[in-house]
Amino acid sequence: MRLFRSRWNGLASIIGVVAVAGSVASVTARPGPPAADEARLRQALEVITPALPKAHVRFLSHDLLRGRDTGDVGFEIAREYVVGQFARIGLQPITGPSYLQEFDLLEAGADRGSELTVGATRLAKPDARFTPAWLTGRATWEGAGVFVGYGLATHGRDDYAGADVRGKAVFLLNGLPDNWSADRERARAAAARVEIARRKGAAVVVELTPHDRMPAGASAGTEPPRRVVVMADGSRPRLRVDAAVSGPAATALLDAWKWVAADGTTARDVGTVRLVRAHDIKRLKSWNVVGIIPGSDPARRNESVVFSSHLDHIGIVPPDANGDTICNGAHDNAIGTSQMLASAEALVRMRPPRTIVFAAVGAEERGLLGSWHYVRNPVMPIETTVANINLDGGREGTITDDVIDNAADLSDMARIVRQVMGAQGIGVTQDRSPAALVGFSSDHFSFLLAGIPTIDLKPGYSVNGDPQRGWTERMHYYETQRHKPADN
Ligand SMILES: [Zn+2]
Image (cartoon, rainbow, N blue to C red):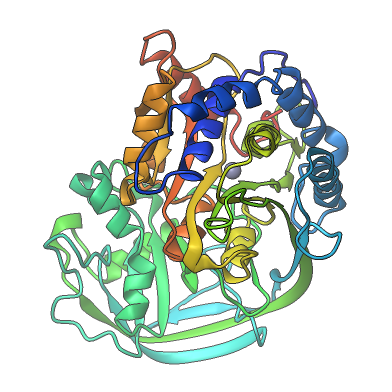
């Protein structure tokens, strides 16, 4: 339900975004924005009044767009809105007069008898959820199974020690040991557990989530299952497990294997495993809306900076306590899209030396698929794409004195951002929410996979010097609004 709040004020973030973009778009040997650019920045920013981004958010999060879900007409209306805005702002289209990159997707339909047999135990929905065999719809696998605890194999720990998992089914425990979940480097390494299992040769990966004995700080895995979508070739940037067993069924398996404690895990054989996956597979389409500001410097216009901001959201869900079913996605990510549009509006006036690409991407909520499509079909070469700026999850409410620089520490982005924000009097802080510790949950992850320096830029926590205020607001958002009808 649409109850637009009037206190939209993401302007502080936009000033920072434009400053960073102007800077990464012009930095050569000398880091930081040349002093002469400051006047041009101020002048360009004059076109952005609070009413402008607010108008974008008002339209994009309207009930008529039904939560901008992938495959729904609501997303297509949002897409055409952004096309119109790109044209008005004066961005250059990518193919003839078109701003659209179309891509085909596969979506899991009804489960038609998928099952997992481990020894004498047979599991099916709802105890287990299955990822489809995308290209055939039906596949059967049989072989040996190995339980490898958390499946961690970095930072001095090897849960695979002594086990050969090549061609076998690997069983992983969801979550992390306590001393891993608070450490960013370890949490990031652990986020690649499915990739690690595949690299070690696992034929099948199964995840276990025993809700009654998850270690403190672990993800409980209790979010309702989301629609599962992949690219038409079956690929996606983040690998998925083939089956996920949760609740008492997972506990029973662990009991049968005499699994005891998080840190005492050693790999053990679990006998014969049979996995049958059978689903209806649906085809659908989505789109990225992509526009360009050609670089003004002939020597550098073949280099590009790509803005990404997902335009889709999660659509319609079962009614909440107020009977509301539409997840409007005002924060997630109408605000990010409005920041990108406002930034385009300012940057088109700054005429940066490098080319700037603006990509309002689709299907982020279904697995970062629009950005994955972009990096595999870039409008400027990946080798000369110097940076990605991702905008996802801006916030309304109080203006913060700082921003969060997710994933910037993985390249010299962190240094550039600190320098540019510092010059604008904006602080830089690290995302403190445990779920966001890894910081790979949005489209910048696709750009990271393509080897492009990136930043996922969000408002920070400090309000008038009080570092707690923004944190409280952010936690409130996570608890009451994120991916719910109340995000309106
Ligand atoms: Zn988002």
